[in-house]
Length: 295
Image 1: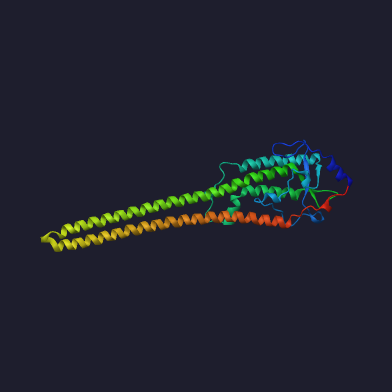
Image 2: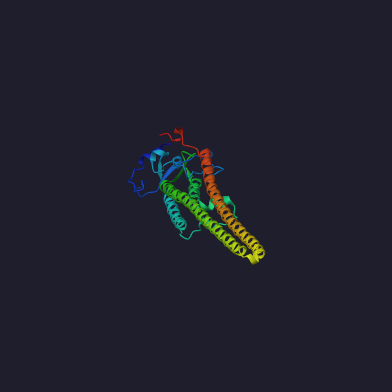
């Protein structure tokens, strides 16, 4: 048990960079999590992207069971992992990535929700992979060692990506509301125009009917023509009003469907993230005081 304690005492507290992550030129590892009997758990632990306070601060040595220097092989693996993370980060920042508007409207809502939050899921999956592939300590088999700097860097990236994802969903909702307002304005204009045109047609028909009815020698003919004109005018007015109302109904229904779809996608993403948070809280064991090696 003594070598583990000496390793923690010999680990220097080097100066940190602006992000607050300590470094001394060597790769640091931290012992987090527990695997009973030194076996991997059946379910992967998941960290909630909404409540970052539930995650241990790997940059603080007091929040875990100490730090140990990795072997040169571990340094090589850390460098390779950092290179893969750079490539993955560049791919996630592709400005030509698909937008929510390009998603298939007939696709499964749960699949679309995961696609919308793919950036956050990639980071969480990478953190899970680090925990699954981490090596256990000889003196504390219930604990594993991970690269503290790489883990903390991915946590910082996760914290930075979450507001972007939430703002993206909020922007889509605002865009849907703006389209709804524009459609409402357009529908009101169409109805007003149809009503005005119908009123003009009826007024012209009435004036023409009155003129024809005023002629003594064609009174009967004028009345018949007046009735025909009035009937035709009323039919046209009813048709215009009905068409305008149907158009407005179709536009409003289409926008309502879009709003429901966007709301369902956002709720689906929030539900998946909330479920992951509950699973992580239920399965992730915490380090107890008796888990530390005795000096």
